Length: 443
Ligand code: NDP
Image (tube, rainbow, N blue to C red; front, side):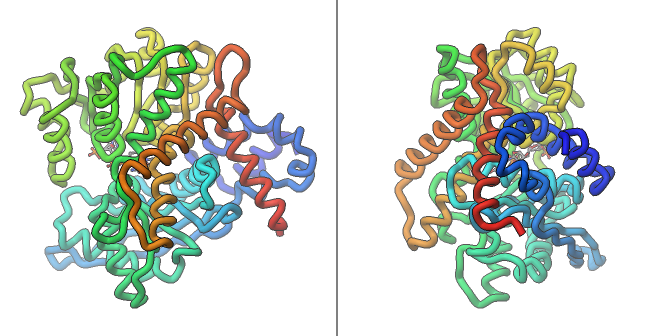
């Protein structure tokens, strides 16, 4: 089967699943020559097996809102691949959640988890539920009712969900509480729990810190570092906040943050009490990023993205396809040194192709934001030990994991003039999953 025949086959089986098809195409394009060269994997059609999720669950969540009205949502759990360990991946609460986005995230997660070298398979779940504007009681009722079905399908050695967009420590707490009540069992079935519920130190910070550790590794390949660099960030949620915190700690300056309504430009940098205020408005479900501009007298640009602001490093931490072709052109025109995806698949295909032809370094989310799931994996180990490690120990392990992911990208992606991080991450991740699948017997 040629690559085009393979892509046509996938498309015929999953028509109109745009995000899913996009990620399969991108992965196929970067691994295909390597795949063909690995005769045992190729002849056994391991990649064809890998793109099909092992199990896909879709279920109704009905719940009563504060006005007494019945509300209906659709929830998902995609148990994508368990070759390397129990399924592992986030739960996303966002109105745009659909089958295509869940499959895309589950496949990416399988590869991302492989890069961490921890024993975790890949999965993803979520619901088309919008937490914005909902009361605390409504959120709790929704989480309880979702778990009424999900509990049948998860477990510490089966599938361990975690947080993702719209799901914070608070929602994980409600989901964890509901699971415990239904099963009469206090067990580490979700990660991203608060410390009081047996979570890991540094889990909240992990994705953002890990991103910046990865950016440091990338910059070091061209003799640079984060110190004194100007950084643009999109989003202002969990990943964005801790990217900003770590950039500040390393002596850089973050000058933008955004939400779905526009972006804020703060030329002096988002730091100190300003960063604390940003965290507060995000924690308030009715907060918006323009509140920051009002509070500190800086400019808010409605309905715009931050990528036209000159920067050395760009870290998109909001949603998929955040950086389009024109945004990539703006980054290149401003001589941005490196683009590090905090959000999964933040860069559209055409934008990624433009960047690939340039000198700008570009790291895909599956490599750069793997710190979140890596510390989730460390949380699973701590739960099994019934111990909490010190912050310094978790941070040290996180740094080593991010460096190791970077090393794998270099090993498989260095083309002599620059590192192709997309190819390097895809090939390294694919190889580990594929070999595990083969050695477990494919059928
Ligand atoms: P949060 O829910 O905490 O924050 C998401 C942020 O993105 C919010 O600021 C939100 O703004 C913004 N946003 C959402 N949609 C858009 C849009 N269309 N345009 C502009 N801004 C938008 O999520 P996280 O920070 O946890 O996750 C961000 C990304 O990082 C996701 O893609 C997630 O999958 C990925 N990720 C997260 C990890 C984690 O551990 N948290 C780990 C690895 C990846 P608004 O308030 O308007 O919705």
